[in-house]
Image (cartoon, rainbow, N blue to C red; front, side, top):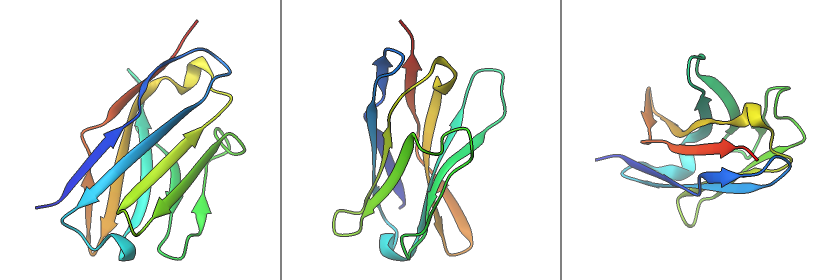
Length: 115
């Protein structure tokens, strides 16, 4: 049974930082590409970070330079470090594992950027 459990979301002021974590089980984590997506209310889902099995990372322009994805294969955990947060970063953030031919999603964690 695959489980992805996100944590670290919350309320932060503009300009602040948060670190999201996603602990995975039930998959071969080290051979999975790991992603973070987000979905704001009324908007389409957006990929915000990806890290391959070879530790190659990709970001959209909207978060490049502010967000950093990393992984710890020994802990089966992927992280998303978010800095210089803006109100438009407010969304539910989801961890996704691309394992084999399937995508597995976590339950999401809410990030709210507001003063």
